[in-house]
Length: 451
Image 1 (cartoon, helix red, strand yellow):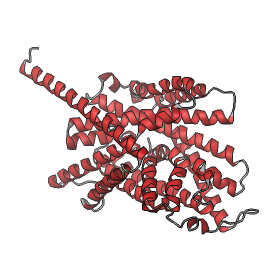
Image 2 (cartoon, one colour):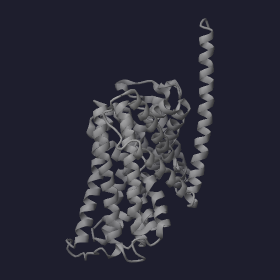
Image 3 (cartoon, helix red, strand yellow):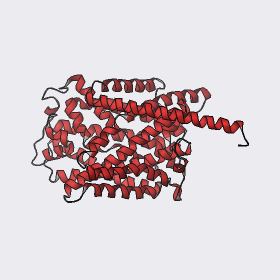
């Protein structure tokens, strides 16, 4: 891959339903003060991405944060975070195929949802089997369409607010302060919005996985991390600022379809169809990037002896074909679920994903602190460094802990946090037992060379 592929792949994974659909839920929870939620969550993402970038530039690896956790905290931690992230992304892949199929079905009645979900999975499996270069080029243009749609939305929204659109009266900025003020639901509303926003930023970490497939990865990762950070913040915060300025925060249309609601208010014809197509593109782009990331993670686990060795075999062009197939297998199961339960399968899949990104980020922060201290002690010169180490690293860890604590005050998030904790504990136990068994076998083989 080239650096431009790296940037767009990360954007493709991060900009999906979290922005196009989920932002409406954040607005409903916090009102215009959801902008504070986005700034806090954005700060969290900036710090985590910078820390991951430091580790990836020093050691580009397809296992990324799983490898770094293993180096910093041991094999059990590395195995756990690798499998946890892989499980999360595999479920997200199935959910994105399901959501895209549901939207297309609403546009073209008569087509079965399960047939479309199957078609999407087959097509993107074939793209991922073609190789990193082809996949990167496809994702580049796919993500470009999505980014272009957001830029057009921002331009239309700004023109509407400024009163430059013919036939559409400017809403001004009153909606930011009417209907209960800027913070109508108080600090608890900001906290609830923050929890929704944090999950929307999940997926940005794929840039550290993809770095291993680029030319001059240590150099590429630095530019990609910087570019991804500011673009995501502009797209997310800019879009939400337009939404809460154009319409009252308690407008029901914002909760169900924020982009469509704004375009309707601006009297843009065909807004429903246009945004439906954009959202489908966004979902499929994210699905493509996530399938790539999942296949490389399970390949790395297999290569390190943390997953079946067969998953580490490479096919033509250096593609881990078995890892790709394994990562998409659950998607085919989801096709069956689409056939049996077309109205409920998407929500079930999204609830299963839960809050696993918080665990991955938390372990990555701890890993960076440990590895950076080792590097400094050994006099290693790092090409890409975390700002103000160790203070900002500790601040990121404290901020993440505060987000988790706030989550327990929200019933829905509390369920996800408990489920994630249970899944993580189970994976830790399995990884520990596996490591003990592997270590015992190694010692036995060493004690009896003839065997």
